[in-house]
Image (cartoon, rainbow, N blue to C red; front, side):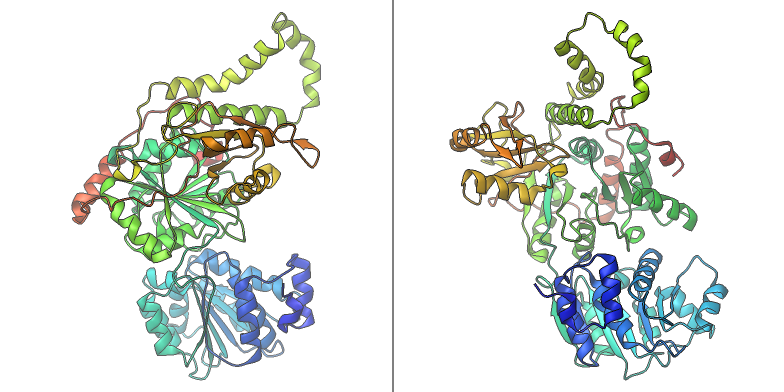
Length: 593
């Protein structure tokens, strides 16, 4: 693989790259950096978020500017305050060995006079949000008439947020002979207009297919009744005990309402929407980055610029109106080479939208079932057992052991284990034991694999438990490959791979059961036994299945009338408000959000 040294970067940048621990360039970096270094050219780069675009334009920009001149030579426009600050921080890290290079962030919500003062002291690179930059130009506080380079980062997001006119006004204040570098995840019409109007014969690079989704993201959809969206959301969360997710709603009202319900039900949740003050927004985002918040409920506009690499799931509580918006939502997970899952909760009338998104992002969705209560109980039981096993012993407990032994006297080992796990398990069991099936009857489910209720599904497939998970370095992609190669099965013979923290589930046809169980008898990986057992709840609603290609479009789209659609969402948000004591305890820091 090509190393950074081969891309033509100067030694000071290579030293900074070494300090950051980067070893090999990403695809967009490998394609963009040589082009930008070798010539003065305009460039359109299409690549998903999380693919290393900041370094793709940051390294060449730092190499090309003159650190001895105080003139502003580079302008980077980004959609949000968070992304603006993130780019500024990264450029400062890249330029740590380039003395004299000064990068200044310009964004709303902070003192405009302080920012103007920083620019006046000498800023070779200005990173700005469009609104604040236009304001400063209008007041004569910044001069971009002599810049050599202009970068439009996340161009489609900026235009989706309504910055089309602002960007045109800003670019009209820049020289005609500058180089313009446009980076975008998708190429909607408005981005094409900007490219044609302000760029001269730009070179174009594409990572993946144009407007496609990231290959590291698996797309799933769950069909429920309109009133069951929130109960379905809770079940998806309970099926993934270590979830670290962004949940997208269409309106600020729904965002706040869903977050409040999650907090009431004991989840570490927070809301992010336009009605929050900048200070409240910063508190929520800081808590999310520290993982004090596991489930961040956000509107699309408020979530622009969120850049957290470890997000495991994106949950679409409601589908967006624009397909490009879905691409940006799903791009919040599966970043930096890691795998991720994008879940969509839909009603039957919305199934046509799933097909439209598939065609746009050029990836298949997997039709999934909302897990049953007993499936959730099984997952939570295994999760609790592994949590107990991996808990570090506090030595202070030794002081209390004599008294504790007196209390537990007469209880044998097996009974004690049952009592310990029952403390939490019983709470989940009592809540889910008599809850209804949330799945609606959908023509796409006829003949679908893995919907049985016994040890074998009604079409003869088997669900297994395996004692390895994320802590062992597996995700749903790598575990599937490991199982397939170990047992010597075909590409599609392993399905519904569902990886948890320290254990996982997967399905095969019943014909492969003997080979699976015999292979994993006394089987070791790096000296550790890897055990596989047939699961007690083989329905596997929470697992990752193969897509049912016989899916129909779902009939007429009954959400054409926007007013009726809003009424449906209002009724949906009323369902499932009952809480139960077995949910994860919310950290008190979340209560203030």
